[in-house]
Image (tube, rainbow, N blue to C red; front, side, top):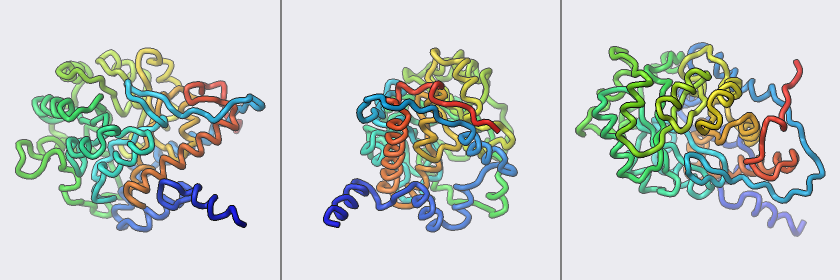
Length: 370
């Protein structure tokens, strides 16, 4: 028994004392008010797409190679020219102050410590400049919504450049808010302060001028041509977030996107869409080689990350997992999420017989027979 304390110490080194991701989720959910918990857990409509996102990962089985003689697997890669210690970015989930007062500042610090990168939200609790100052190594991509006054969109692009970001994430699947039954049932109405970090009360641009379209639906949805033209004012590469078809992926790249994020918004926007993972192969076939590809929606483990990379994603974006870590233990909770994801990935890569995440491909998967 003399080795037990040492082993326990190393097992939990560098993070909160959680042994599994499910423990983090349980602690986070237990500590949240019921309406906030429903907001985080829930999806749109009858939550059909929410379930499909998880079911999709179970339709794939691994094809391991044994006795390879390989060393410790390498989890490093890059995305949009940004180096990653693990192939993970954190999603630009808004209202982050609901989960922890430090919100995305804590997420970015955790990402910096563990080799992940933040996509920092436009509708967050803290301004993009504040998050960048908290962890410039990790706060590398900033999010925008293609709505509101184009002059403000251009002004935000200038702010993003001035704050030192390296890329922009444009969320294209959110011209209006999804029909979220749980939020409506709960009369969920959070303090606007949790989404107004970039548009504070009394500032030059009112919050409702930018995000009012999510609820009033009075203005036409932007076109790809309009978005492409409005992105020409920045020197930064951009990613279209919320693409689910080959047609949309091709349109995004034709409009100037350097990357696409295959996503159904975690099942929170249009219920009844296919799982994001199910759509990944057709999008890889359509734009692979012309643009980098990321995936979110339904990712809950290191195994899920490996599956997505094997199907052609260059990186994976985690939203709920990061938010659960934040709610469970702030910066330490998000760090532990990354540590557990990395440890599981390295275990799976070793058992698969893969030396690096960059070597993953469809040859390591097969469809599970019904």
